[in-house]
Image (spheres, one colour):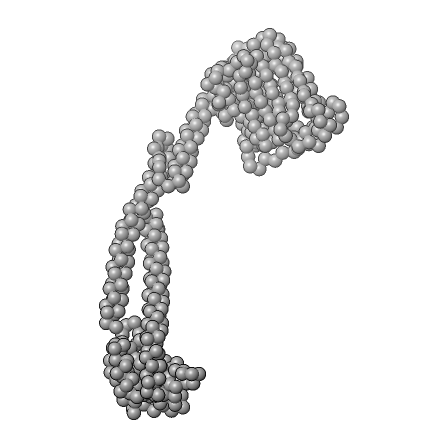
Length: 463
């Protein structure tokens, strides 16, 4: 398996190779284009110099003679040029190439001239005097590389380019090594930290800085570590709470059955009712665990129906009124209906869509928790209203809760210090949170003006 260093280094080298290859192709194309432009310019310039001279010779001599043409053109001729002069019949008069004067007698004009047989020959241009063709001229350079100075220059450019490419490749390779090592080092530290995290360590220091993606991974790994630590803490706490809640009823059951078995006490109805109460406590704990597992399962689906907010709240109030009165508590409800008629079916209805059983379970947990933690003579109010497309339930009670417990009251398996001696598994509010989130909502607890508020909101479409 290839390492991140080798993959990064290979990718950078490949990119560098492609870049240098592209630059080489562009460089070669540029050189070739420059040479071509140079040849065209020199050819045109040579012809512009020779044409006036030949025109003057023709005017003076009335034709072209090799000696006279040579005498007039000698000052313009160099070894990397060719100059071919023909008369009106395309017969060669003056032939010059590579610093030598060629004998016209060696070349037969034929029907199309002899330019194809001469070094560097090109189609000749007509020499015109008074609208009459008096001769032909083919002149130009033998090419950029026919000049020794140009060859030396071109060689220097190519050598400089090769040295530049070699130096650039060496420097880029060094930079690639440094960069690849930096990336792989940070990735190696991250992978090592994740490995230690998977092995049970919970105080792993993940690297900071570097690339944004690496930083994001490090932050996510740190958040995962915090979450795992919190889950493990909650699991240990839950284990202790469940062990305590099970140990008490199991011990009571064992003592009762031993007493009955040994004949110390009779199996009276009161005695059996006490035993049954302990069994119910165990059953409640098991049911809460099963319910929370079912609600948090990805396979869990809601059964939404259209509900009347006013009727739904009144039923909850009637359900818990006897329990509140038993603890000398005042329980009342308030439903605020929106004034726009589009959200109502009639003057006292406000319909919304939710799973009635699940929502009732969620609010029952909150109300029962409020009843349990509100002192005698206190008050509990269940408010319900719409707000920005949500249905909001606000359960208010005059009880208090430790501020440090508020951020954790809805955590799974969490029980605050004030709840450890009370009946229950500590899963009720966790079930409430899971149900609210299943309804595209949420739940939170706040203490305002000396009262405890639990806000449960769900996303509910109007019927």
